[in-house]
Image (cartoon, rainbow, N blue to C red; front, top):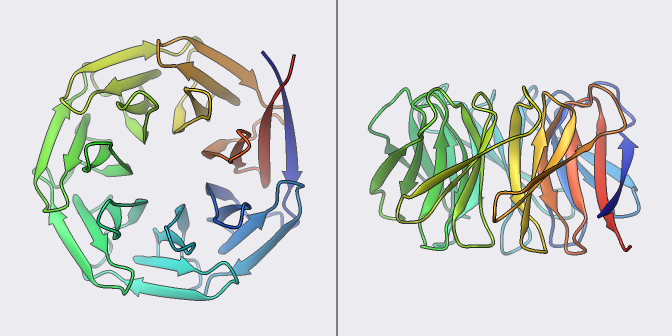
Amino acid sequence: MKITINEYAIARSDAGPYGITVGKDGALWYTEQKGNRIGRITAKGEMNSFPIPTPDAGAMTIVSDQSGDLWFTEYKANKIGRISLNGLFAEYELPSADVSPFGIIQGPDGALWFTEMNSGRIGRITPSGDITEFDLPNRKAFPSFITQGLDGALWFTENQSNTIGRITTEGEVIEYSIPTLNSGPVGITSGPDGALWFVQKNGNKIGRITTSGEMKEYIIPTPGARPHAIVSGKEGELWFTEWGANQIGRITTEGVITEYVIPTKNAEPHGITVCPAGNVWFAEECNQIGCLMVLSE
């Protein structure tokens, strides 16, 4: 398989892009955790951005809802943000102080579900801004990324308790221990095979858990890869960022891993998404947005 990687520089040197997602308009939307803006890039590499109303909000992950609005977490400001496709913002302050919201996804109930790293809770916010919080069994679990499973529940990584969590829309929680100790799970996504796939930053592995709780783990070939985020592709594969190895990884549902080096050294890739055309887009903290394209042979 032949690939090419293009990189697009952000004009501001202090942007620090982190999360990235596909918008309903076909463009890619990303957070600037340092620049305090929400950015937009087209498939041709044309960029523009919008300043977040709250200063130093610490925007992290971002997701598009069914209506087309983009929702994002404000890690430092303790808020959930929303931006329309034409750049209009709304922000919702969380009921508890200093909870550090991080991961976010739309649930099957139409609400946005998010993790609270510092409080050990999972939060839920409706499109109108009503917020509910659910306590996890271990309040020091450090929940990180979150995704929707095909079983209608929300699945999330618990970075410090080394578990994968599952929460129903009624707030019932089940946790599953990861076989590798101190694995440091971070990104998680629903896979093309119906299982949940997650990365282990410290364990240097990709994990897979079925909706019934059965786990498998696959070792990443490059030592110290420090995988961060993961997403399903368009051809039955999954893609993930390797922050430590400066690579983009690809894994099949059979566990076969291939890695691709990012042209810019020390790019620090974090968030990753796949556009409708099948191209893999990722945020580089070095102030670039990358795009990996699979070429026809």
